[in-house]
Length: 313
Ligand code: SER
View 1 (cartoon, rainbow, N blue to C red):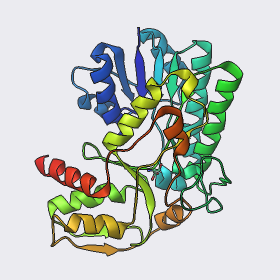
View 2 (view 1 turned 90 degrees about the vertical axis):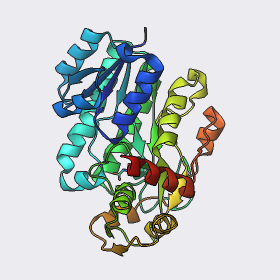
View 3 (view 1 turned 120 degrees about the vertical axis):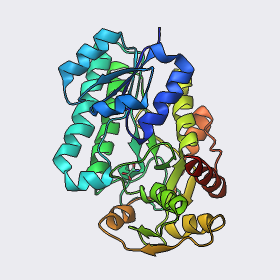
View 4 (view 1 turned 180 degrees about the horizontal axis):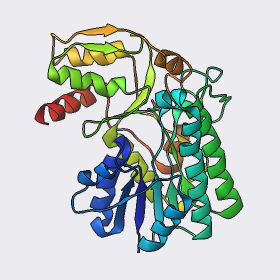
C-alpha cells in the first residue's frame, strides 16, 4: 500500500502538494510533517508529525512507524535566507537529502521526490532558454546546495537504483500560502498588495526577467513526473521545467488591467544580485519529450486567478 511522507509540508509548496496527495491517495495514506508544530492546523483530519529533517534517527523512526513507501522531501532553506545563513542552508538542504537517500536505499522505498531549482544555474550559463545540460557554476549558497543535491540523486539512482525524481522549479506563485526567504517571492507578494490596495515596493529592478510557474501547474507537473512509468524518467539529476517568464514591470502591468490605480516602486536589494545570476527562461524540451509536460497558465490567466482567489480569501 502507498504510504507517503511529506517533509516541509507547512511550506509554500508542501501545503498545496499535501492537499493534492491526500485527494489522490486518501488521508490515511499521507503523513504531513514539518519542524513547525503550528503547520498541523493546515491539515485538519490528516496525519501530522513534527519532524526535524536533520535528525536522521527521528526520520528513520517515522518511516518505520508509518511503514512509509514514498517520500516527498520538501523541507529546505530558500535562496535569500541561504545567503544570510549558508551553513544552515547546507545542513538543511543537503544533510537531510543524503539522510533520506540513505534511508530510501536501506528500506527499499518505492519512490522519492526532491525539488531542485533554476538556482543550479549561474551567470556563466546561457541566460535564455537555458538548456538542461550546460555550464552551471551557481554562485549562491542555495544554488550550490541544489546542484550538489542533484548529483547525489543521480548517484543514488545509478549506484543503488533508488527511484528518485526531481524538477528544477522556477519561482512558484500561489494564493493559498506564502513563500519564505526566496528571490522570486515578490511575484506572490505583489498580488497581496494589489488585493489590499496598498502600493508595492519591489526588491528587484523592473526589467529583471525570471522563470516562474503558477502553483496548479507546479502541482500537476510534480504529480505527472511521479506517476510516469519508471522507464520514461531518463534524467535522474533533475528536469528543467518551464511555464512563464516575466519581469516585475510585466506582472505589474497585468495587475493594472484589473486594478488601474495600483502603484509600484522599485527598490532593489541584495536579492537583485541573486536574480542577475539566474536564467531568464528555461528550455524544458526533455520534460516535454520524456513524460509529456505541458503548462496550462499564461500571465493574464494567472493574474486573473490569483486576484479572484485572494479577493475571496
Ligand atoms: N523560488 C526559489 C527562490 O527564490 C528558487 O528556487 O529561492
